[in-house]
Image 1 (tube, rainbow, N blue to C red):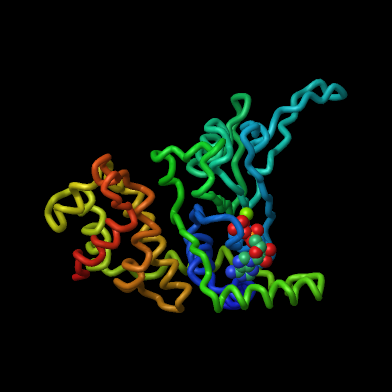
Image 2 (image 1 turned 180 degrees about the vertical axis):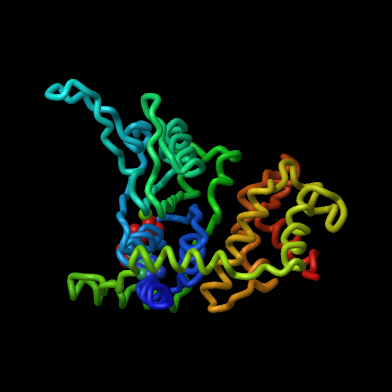
Length: 312
Ligand SMILES: Nc1ncnc2c1ncn2[C@@H]1O[C@H](COP(=O)(O)OP(=O)(O)O)[C@@H](O)[C@H]1O
Ligand SMILES: [Mg+2]
């Protein structure tokens, strides 16, 4: 796991945060939504993750004419045997990159989000289980609005984490240029050591055994309930139309365990929770119309909650 983290990071300049979030989700068994402008190495990050894992990988490039069956698969008539045979679509892989998910039409998005929530696909009345592990990393580009379909807010909480990637600074920009030049000269990216599927399964098991102290569970619950009740930060609560559901509580706890595991600890600490709170919670709440008009963001509100709610 540590070798994978190091080699992923080496090929992704200044993307330590993204790499960590991808690994947190991988170990926690969750899905990730990566948002950022084009050209910020979102696709590259997921392709590198795929080449560092011994699991099957598929990439789905979303377009407005994509159909649900392009993703899930279709029953195909086999005249020699006189039967319909289900031919699995790209969703039947262990790691799936769904590139530019907001360019896919709503029916495709809901087929995908259903698969993510249920771990199965239903076609023609039959249910087919998806493989284990099953991890979706979707990317979306926030600046393109023409011909895009925003993900339904109610379905966003299928993602364990929502990660924002920002433009690099000048130093990183320069290092990116050097790296790409080197790769072009060598006609290849440096190969990654591959983590075996059995090692990944073992890592997941160990991560889930990470200890969450009762006080830490209370801290998570207080952060989440502060989006619903006036108790701790009424001015933040007032800005929220739809608060975070228990899925958010569970997600934040899982992610904190995974982060602690990746840091080599057998117990999570308040900093794990505080660091992940915005990525684990912000996409699960909806602001009031007024708060949004005043320029508040869900992330900003979660950060204020983290400042206000003290760990016990
Ligand atoms: N932080 C980075 N580290 C390494 N390469 C980068 C980085 N940012 C951009 N690049 C380069 O820019 C190109 C665009 O990356 P890509 O993954 O296709 O972007 P996105 O999917 O975000 O649009 C890639 O070829 C990659 O080599
Ligand atoms: Mg891309």
